[in-house]
Length: 287
Ligand SMILES: Cc1cc2nc3c(=O)[nH]c(=O)nc-3n(C[C@H](O)[C@H](O)[C@H](O)COP(=O)(O)OP(=O)(O)OC[C@H]3O[C@@H](n4cnc5c(N)ncnc54)[C@H](O)[C@@H]3O)c2cc1C
Image (cartoon, rainbow, N blue to C red; front, side, top):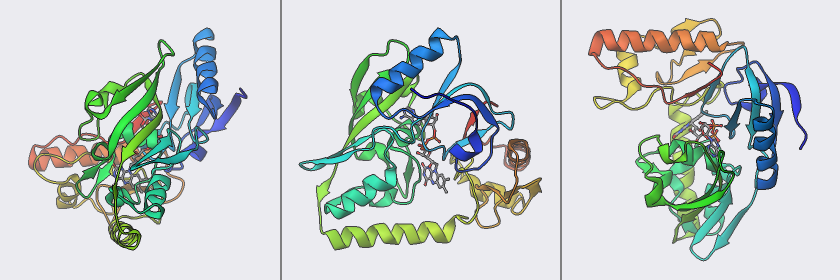
């Protein structure tokens, strides 16, 4: 496997923020992945798995280890009766589009969520009341410790709101999803409706990681942050979006430290006003 040196991680995430990785590799198949993990262990080098980097805030100093990016990993998506099987590095949007073209219903509300199949499982990604676990049947995974493969059913994975503790230390190699047969045009219409709604609500014109904080028990994080009059607040090149207060956008040249400053400010103001401690949905890498 080709291992790249000093690659800028800003090029591997949707935030466009992040310094260089000492080492970075782009496996295409499971054997490559095993070779890379074995290499990292043999060299006592820390390693991290990333998908399409759409839920990451990466340190300005980068990462002193091996980043295994699954951007080129197992790019297949096939139909098996009423289900679809997709590789871990396939974009969720590809699965949604493939389901549309096959006249399979079930993933319409997941349209527009960026990221990979593996990332979607790890985050139990969801929107508009539907989560990836609602259509997931099973996932094939690789243990980073034993390097053995194991398939889990959706029940065994016990995914919950933006959480998949059962996948800690495991890489999603592929997953199978169940769908119901439907009318192609109707599925396309519903999918497009969701995409339009998302474009209206989200500041898609700027790089971001999507929602920074998880939903709270009291209210959506965006409502609480907005009530603290923080919309439009800036730190360096980062800004609490004027369009959606749970997005901290990169207005140009933002550093991870700028985003962190705004995260701290939002947490502290919301806690002072409402006594609610916001919890990050974004994952930190190297921070
Ligand atoms: C504009 C925008 C809108 C968004 N809207 C939504 C939304 O509506 N709903 C929502 O839930 N999320 C949303 N997100 C967040 C993000 O898209 C999801 O969390 C997505 O599922 C992350 O996938 P990824 O491949 O980019 O993962 P990454 O960001 O690369 O990684 C996220 C985590 O998953 C792990 N991971 C990645 N691939 C694998 C794998 N194959 N096996 C095991 N672990 C893996 C990583 O180690 C990391 O812990 C949005 C993001 C953006 C930028």
